[in-house]
Image (spheres, helix red, strand yellow):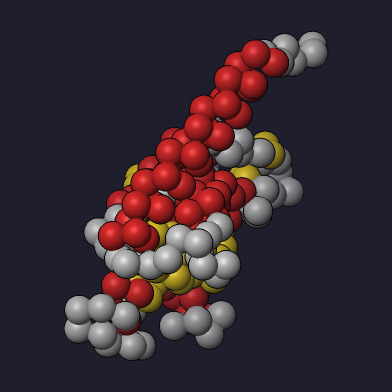
Length: 203
């Protein structure tokens, strides 16, 4: 069956995003002017547009897109139902408190029920929830909850470790410090995940 595409809806969405970029650009130009910067300077005159494009198309893109579809495959008699761990998935996000980036890696572990997912899907889900103003604790929980529901898994564990630029470039200005958060959904043994990471030399 062919999928029906609403061309008018797509056009309206593109128009809305274009308008958002224009509004953000105008507001950011006012911020630069308040800072006393010369908006006619060749280095700065296109900065409001660049910032608007970055926010809408990249760092906050998850606010304007649908969640990724999760491709799953049925488990047969030749497929293990044991723990699956996908580690060291890199990501970047934007701290909603100071709009500074935080950058790190995530580990996603799950116990399948009757289906397993394509290995790239954990990264796509992480990127989707990271592409918006976030806090690390919420990001960790959102990824775990989404995968738990979409996979109908017995259990999901997500571990996120990240460095926050709001601690590096402002406030206490401490470099090298990282934050670790975990989220568990369903029935999964956290110690078993840690043991698997130790076997892989990651802990």
